[in-house]
Every structure is written in structure tokens, then in C-alpha cells.
Length: 277
Image (cartoon, rainbow, N blue to C red):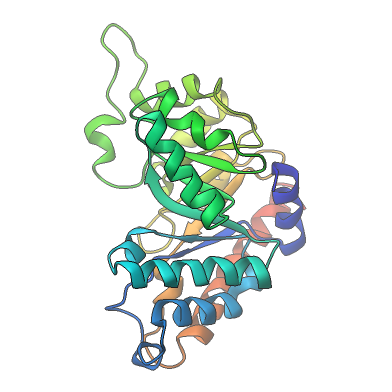
């Protein structure tokens, strides 16, 4: 899937919503705990209820890894289900990998060959040779961590280089422009840092940005769009807990659909306001 295909799906669904499948075995309703593969059963019901309103799903790999081999089976079943039932939806492995080249090559193989995700989140801390193995795959994406939504982002990402006014996240974005293209490289920018999106758009005007932090973390969708939208939307905004855990009863999928629809309606209004659709 390239950037134009992603944009076409945004226009078709009038949405740039990504739903994070941060599926916690301790939080899912009892009705799905009885299934052979409970995380997959929960995900399947969420997907069936919300696929009309979303352009991407983003399983957070930690919630599956924490269950050992059974977790990986649930992840594979989820990925296969999305590809088979909703092939137009962008599938992101939120894995935050990144290691020496030979190791990154194996991570890339795991997520792009074994599980056939469209994209994987990658840490840039170890530099170009830790990222490029992911970029060798055709029609696959690296989503590079740039400016994250957590409080710890202030520990390093906003630090300035010695003798320079350039901050670390800025260095990451500017340097990595030479590693990939607008068809295989995105950046993670937290919604809680929305005012900085206008700066980021000076350095990466045409790249897609994955924006976590809207919903339970308190980020403003209107602010994200105000500062970050471009002529092809250029945004994939993630919401996880505010949608998938909006209800903990047997109605969880119905309520998740209602919450996703509310977000999609706001997105549709904003897309029209900025003349994207």
C-alpha cells in the first residue's frame, strides 16, 4: 500500500482513524474470555464493528508477547483476519523495534514476511543501519518514532544538540529524510504535542504522520488537524482505550462502534473544513 492508496481510502471512508488493538487479557469482557483465542475473539468483534469507520488498525505487540506463544497465535489470527476481510485497511505492528542491522533484518522478516503487516514502528536511536533493513521491502512502511505523546518524551526528544539549537526529534526527522520516501516512511508525533506539528510540517511536508494520544491521553483532534494536515490529509490518528474499552459488558463491540462513529464524524467535518474531501 502506497501513500496514494492510503489517501484514497481516507477519502472513501471520510476518516483518518486508526484503532489501536491494545488488547489486555485482564480488561476484556468475560464473554470473550471463554473463547479458545480470547484476544483474537475480542479483536474480531471490535474489527467487525468498526471497520466502516477506520483506515488502520494498530495491534500493540507487547499485549500479545506478554502471553508467550499463545499471544503470538492471537496476533497472527488478528492480522490474517484483517487482511482477508478488510484488505483496504492499513495494518500497523506497533512493535518499536530497532537494533543492529542483522537483528533489524530479522525483525523486519518477522513483521513483513511472517505476519505481512503493512508497517512497523521503529526506534531511530541506533541510527540508519538499524532502520534500513525495514526499508528494503516493497510496499512496506517504517513508522519512525519522532516526538512521542508520553511525559518521558521531555527526557531526551526535546534536548538540544551541543552548539546547536536543533532538538533531538528535529534531528531524527531531518536526517531520516535521506533514508526513505513519502511512500515508505512515516513519523510518530504525539497528539499531546500538537502545537509542534506546524514545525514538523516544515521539515516533512508530505510525509504521513501517525498521531497517538487522542482519546484517553487527552489530545485534541481539532488541534492535530489545525497544525498537521496537508493536501493529502497526511495524518493517521490513533485511538485505543477510548474506543475498545468504552464498555466492559457484552455490548462492548456495539459501544466501540458508537465511539468510532463519533470520531469519524468529527474527522469528516474537519476533512471538509480543510477541503480534503
